[in-house]
Length: 173
Length: 319
Image (spheres, chains in turn purple, orange):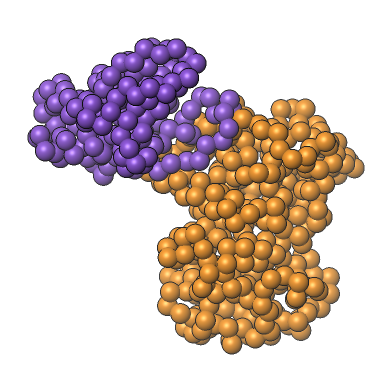
């Protein structure tokens, strides 16, 4: 495995994404962050902290999309993770979905289905730390920490301090 | 879950029990919010195979399956070819040929679910929704889920909780499944019944027994009142209903002797005035309707855990 992002690079990427979110949405008035478990939640919390130091605090929630996946029968069973929608709901909000790695796009498709059940945000945007390509669906990210071209045999491992005790992203066979 | 079926609480380790309860908790958080229906089991077919009357269990499984977008086929023995003498095997195989992918069975014979699961007649997973006087595992799971909601300090472990199961233990599959499950989670369980309604061999269950309800009341954290199953009683198990109600019924006076934090449970259907008085059933300490609501999410969790993932071959239940 070779390291493609270290702690300071992850930090800079998330700060840049935070600035881009503010710029793109002309402020944070109606912005809501939703992290996709597990590491998307950590990233959402960090971006939430950056946004509050740069501009103002925003609601941060979590969305487990397991029950909405279309590939459930192709994989071993997954345990459900918490879903916590912020008190203000999603109706009319600018919703930023946050995940660690964007790959096939199926997780995001499932997330869009789940959001459709929860309300009608004004916009849904996507922020990811790593975009590794190989999309199977017409989905793209609005905010990307780093584009990393990979082949399908490689794996991308995102580790975050809060969960893994270290901040780094590795790519390897 | 390791097993591909849910037949008995004995098949579940404490970790697996907690896995089901945790899954149910996440599902209840999702479905209490705005999402009423999940697409998880879209296009899958679940059969309710009911050889014995039931309202809440059948409806609860049906609601659970539908909230996961599964299709539900309901079968009840009354008015079916069973009355023409069709066997369990033929009935189950017929339903599977129609596309059933999971079979929920309620039967008056103990062991019917196990027979169906282990005979090799069918490929589908089997869920026991009550077999004779043997077990009713999803009822015990929903009861544990309800207890856990009321005692957040005992989230992973029921050690220190005292739970009384009162009444017709002899005929009760609910009592057996609960005794197994609650003691597996570490609770102290006391079965309380007249000697005639205490099962033979109860000393081998890992529970305490008592013939005296009043002596147990002050220490209970949860009291589970069982229905007096008149339909299974072809003998005189107690002199009169009035005497039973006086000795083992839960009325307002006994309710007052329970801890304020104690909860009153009943698996339903209730004989109001016999094992439980109407005032107690409708009192703030009663969680009977919560049990019904929790039944749906617990059964959703069971269906998800049995049908949700890729079918992994597990140890040779199926031949």
